[in-house]
Amino acid sequence: MNAETLPCTPVHETPFTIRVDRQADAAVVYAGGSCTMTVSKRLADTLREVGGENLRVVVLDLTGLDFIESSGLGGIVAGYLRARLHKGELRVVNPTPDIRKLLEMTRLVQLFPIYPSIEAALGDNVAARMPSTADFPDSKASSAARSASTTKTPVSPPV
Image (tube, rainbow, N blue to C red; front, side, top):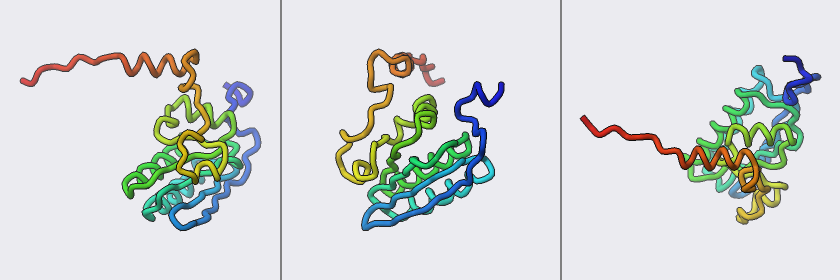
């Protein structure tokens, strides 16, 4: 496969940037550039640190992020888990269409909602989140999610 067939492959890697703005009971983490394997630890470390600060909400603004690979997604999950451990939430803001599609395909949107703006993410109104394809009954992703959730695995009786 070449870069033309993979929309999430960076053709020109841009420098990764990360910045945190802390507020009373929240923090906004701004991630930008290309989150490749060589820099994904910075994302994971930052999200784990901020997630451990007993904040009500950690907002991850992906507006400037043009690429992320699996190790970066793992960093986001690590931040989500740390925030949950400390009774907080991780909320994602404005990923690019390719990154949003990746979040939907990996079903990470079921863990943390996607919001259209930082203001909406900081508010308590969960209804302000952007809909994912799983929210639409006619979408393939929604059909797959429904069939996966209705498939029952037989349970063996204890021996």
